[in-house]
Amino acid sequence: MQIKKLLLVEDLPEKAEEIKNVIASAFPEVKVEERCSYHSAIEEIYRNYTEYFLILLDISMSTYDVNVEENGGVPEALAGKRILEGMYLRDIPTKVKVVTMFESFDGKSIATLNHDLREDNPDCYDGYIFFSFKKSDWKQQSGIQIDNAT
Image (cartoon, rainbow, N blue to C red; front, side, top):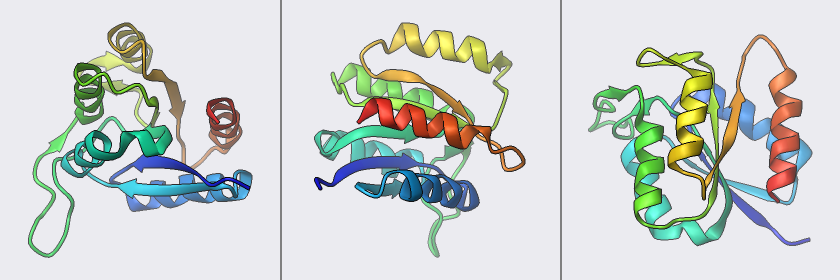
């Protein structure tokens, strides 16, 4: 069995755990690498994008990783969109699925954001998964979408 790598960019630990559990149960051959801020994500993507078959990307996240020296910086409502823009400018073709639990961003609905991301990043943006702690339908949807990406 060949190990495939997926990059999960998520700053909420509970949400990241839920996503990793779904992946581990449905795709034991997939190794999940994690980043939890805008800066750590772009650093990893720009350096190692060829290692990943898929990136699961949160849209809203902290600027920096939270640790003993850093409080995470300023939360950015559209950090994931900025990551996609950087990937486009560098011709990084790795497929990206947005995983979000919000229905709007800076006054834009998820449907409008989805349309804009598809239009602006046709080579890498591959839709979104609406995450919920209360409902479980996202688990099946994410499984199907990850399966289609492998």
